[in-house]
Amino acid sequence: MLSKSLMAVLGTMALLPPVLVLGQVAGERAAPATEKPRVFELRTYTTEPGKLDALHARFRDHTTKLFEQHGMTNIGYWTPADGPRSKDTLIYVLAHESRAAAEKSWLAFRNDPAWLKARGESEAAGPIVRKVESVFMNPTDYSVIQ
Image (cartoon, rainbow, N blue to C red):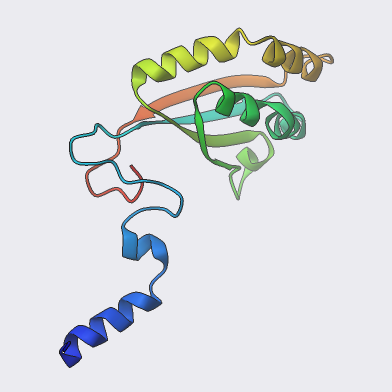
């Protein structure tokens, strides 16, 4: 028979979102202790003036699917909520099995005929991206997402 205090704790846990109870994001798996966690890549794109919508269309219609085909996992995509950067900036996070896997995936992606076609069509009136920044990140041991 469970004590009243243990029953209260279990009852409280039942009310928590799955991410807090499981210690991971829904749909994500926690890395076993012997397995090295994935590496994440934070990318920030600054567009040419007035080209953010074109960049969104390219990602929505082509890029995210091609990333998945080349072994990259789409984690999330954002635009700044305030200020002038909200008009020209796309920020996103990808996950890779390792840094070596990231390099291999990017090489295959950049040479993919479907990507070259999509990029060419989206840039028919000129370049849409002015600047790309990339930062590779390792999750901490207490990170919700591994």
